[in-house]
Amino acid sequence: MTDTVLDMTSKPSAQNRERLDALRLYLITDRTLLPEGQFLAGIEAALKGGVRAIQLREKNLPENELRALAKDVLQLTHTYNALLFINHRAELADDIGADGVHLTESSAAVRKIRKQYPGLMIGKSTHSFEGAKRAQHQGADFVTFSPVYDTPSKQQYGPPQGLEKLQQVYAGLDIPVLALGGIDLSRITPVRQHGAFGVALIRAIWNSPDIEHESLQYINALTGETQ
Image 1 (cartoon, rainbow, N blue to C red):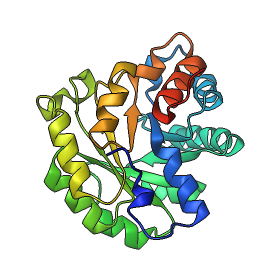
Image 2: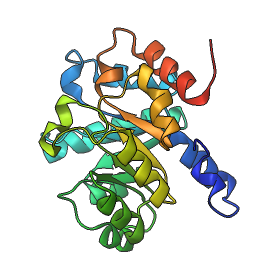
Image 3: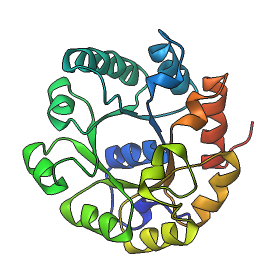
Image 4: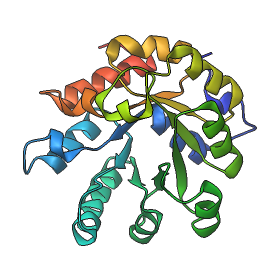
């Protein structure tokens, strides 16, 4: 059940293999969790710890500030050979040369974004089996499924989905499913055993006093490596 999506697809290119493997740990930003002025330093620490996929999710920034921040983050992800996804804003992602966009329930349909921006990777937030199937059908490269466990950031979507629903989504899709919501180190093995290709994290990394070390701990847990 922990086989990668690469085992389910036919002869992926080396580039696609590397891009998909980067999604093992998908780190979502929240600058409010970091001390003022430490946002970029925090991202670099996570990248030093092995994170290779960042979603810039800063919803309340004015356009000019978001664009400037996105360019700064893109420089860091390029330095560490990591992927950058911009939350919701496909036009911004395309304009600055980011790797992809992450669509929410309020975003345009996946098929529309795929047609307008064929060069972008597309992730999609989902909260049901039907939503995940629809995202795949319309051309998403991967989905996040949440909340698997209880978490403050996803309480508006109702009670936790649980591992059995995660497994149902995994069994019905051929693209990576990333578990999101309440994931900590003790829950890596259960979500992987129930089909998660990887995990999407927010507080688990940003609340750590040592972001680089915490990132490495999660990477090791996801890859089966030990220090």
